[in-house]
Amino acid sequence: MEWLPLGVFALTDSEDSDVENATLFLQLAVSKEGIIAGTFQNTATDKTIEVEGMVDQDSQRAAWGPVGEEWPIMETGIYNLTENESGALLHFSEGQSQQWTMVRLDEPESQSSSKQ
Picture 1: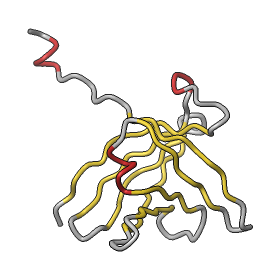
Picture 2: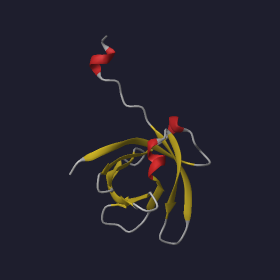
Picture 3: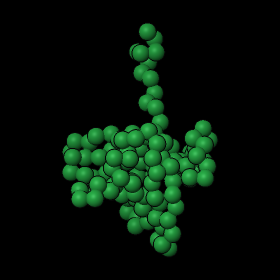
Picture 4: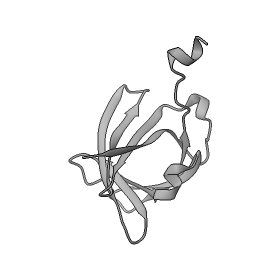
């Protein structure tokens, strides 16, 4: 399967968009078939979880959650995943939803380009 990396994002709740102190990170990729795969990491707890999901071809909504779990589910428009900063909704099993902000992290410079 061919994968297109979407990037690495710092996650912050909308009330605290301080990316400098972020401890939640999400790395995502999408296949040509619309399958989403990636990794969620909480650096405060040193916990890493695989995530999976799909892009709805009609609505262009992307949704993903922990592998093997039904909740929580995070969703946003697929176009938002190409932006440097965008909103996303996090849905919980009790019916609650929270607004979060995804901020794209810059790719680290390669060692060869930093030596020039």
